[in-house]
Amino acid sequence: MKLFSLAFSIKKIPKVTWSSEDAFNLKPKLLTLIFLVFGLFLFGLGESLLITSGAGVGPYTVLAQGISNHTGWSIGLSTFVISIFVLLMWIPLKQKPGMGTILNAFIIALTIEFSVYYLPYPETYPMQILQVVVGVLIIGIGSGFYLIANLGAGPRDGLMIGLQKKTNLPIYSIRTIIEVSVVIVGWLMGGVVGLGTAIFAFGIGPSVALGLSMVGKASKKT
Image 1 (cartoon, one colour):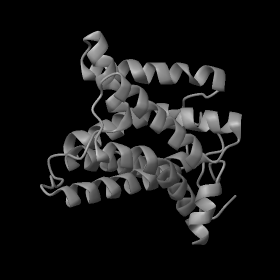
Image 2 (cartoon, one colour):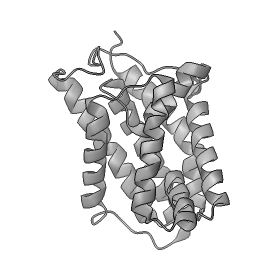
Image 3 (cartoon, one colour):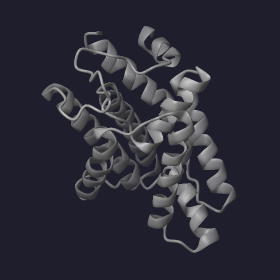
Image 4 (spheres, one colour):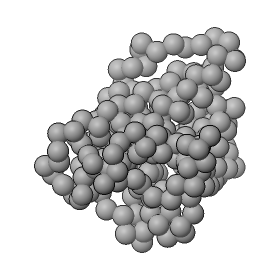
């Protein structure tokens, strides 16, 4: 219970003994790099579980669908444009990329590319929803590892961190506001929303905060 309470109050990324002191470190400690890659792998695995669940796509895919409906662009191109826009939002928030930002794209994409062939595709709705919940929790734990490594965040997590620093609100609140806002805009533009989408939008904030708390608590603080 104490861990959950801590998760909902956490306002910054914990620093532990294996955290990089500098996000631009091109020669991190081996343990830091291992935890970064492990976290990104878990993140990709969680995304894959969402995809194969069949219970609804993620918020940013809903937005990509909406943009595609209005522009005629493919979902892939729409997703790319969204990512560029999110990165541009880093500028006023004074967020800067690092090694983890680049590895984020490659490792998560590769994990999804290969894991979707081996993961279950549940046929019953309760099992689909259960798989979404498991996927969201795994993404949260993966986020805990890779963000605490402090080698640069992915586009969406960088936006979350930047907004948290500006507002001083708890991390779970910022992430939930972002994801729910994205879903609403995407839905208004014609994107398809499922129950899995709603679970992700409302659950990813607390899940990331819980992941940060669990990894931070399990590791020795600096």
